[in-house]
Structure formats: C-alpha cells, structure tokens
Image (cartoon, rainbow, N blue to C red):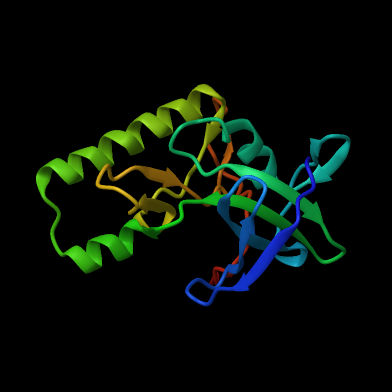
Length: 180
C-alpha cells in the first residue's frame, strides 16, 4: 500500500463514515471508514499479505478494479479497528437520497441505474464475490455530470461465491436477532 498525506474533515451525514479524506497526490476525495473489531464476525481466517483481515477487505481487493465498485485505496489495522480508505466521487449521494429528492425517476434514468447495477454485480460474480446487501443505500450516484454513473459500496455482508447454500453471516454485526 502507498502512504499519502491525508487532510481529514469531519463528516456527519452517515454514522459509519468518520471522515472525508482529501488525497492531494491523486487529487481525489475519499471516504474513511472505521470497522470496529468487536463488531466484526470473523468465522474464518481471511489472509491478505500474510495477516488475518476482515472478509470485507478481501472482497474489496478482489473487486476494486470492477467498474461500478468503490475502490479500496488503502487500509490500516489499529488495535481496536480497521481503517478503510475508499474512493468517493466529489459530488455524490446514495440512491435512496437521490430518489427521495427527485421523487419518481424517469424510465431512462431508472434503466440506466438498473443496467449498471446488473453489469457491476455480474462482474463481481465473475471475480468470485457476491455482495448480499444490494439496496438503494449501498449505491452511490455520481452527480458531477448527467451520466448517472453509480458505485456499489458496503461489501460488509458479502461473501465468496460458493456452490452451497449461504447459511453463515460474514460481515459486521450491527444488530442482534432475538430468538424465542
């Protein structure tokens, strides 16, 4: 991983995004995510460069080159968490907020979004990764121009594709299901 000097700015619109990172070397804006170690369920050991890391990091490394997937630029391990630095379009919002603000979408715009999501998911599957949490909050819309380019984010519930049923949860535990 390359080391860069980052300028940190507070961001309050999403609970799991702690900072926006401005990388002056690449001249792009990035999100700075913190994954708390106590919330990460590691049912298997996932190795990256000789060390155990959360599955989300392994999955993002496999699909970061896929058009339409957020790129993992760097990550760091801290005693209590992992810090993930990910690319972010300069002007964007998630699809949920985009639809809420616009109301109903024109058919052409909806078709463009759906086509990009399907193409991105197929490319992820070709690389052996399944997202398992595709929803409007996990799709960023680039607002810089009118092309409506999207990025799939949050692979915390993802998994490696296998031929068996998916019965285990591999991801970040944010709530606990009560059983009677």
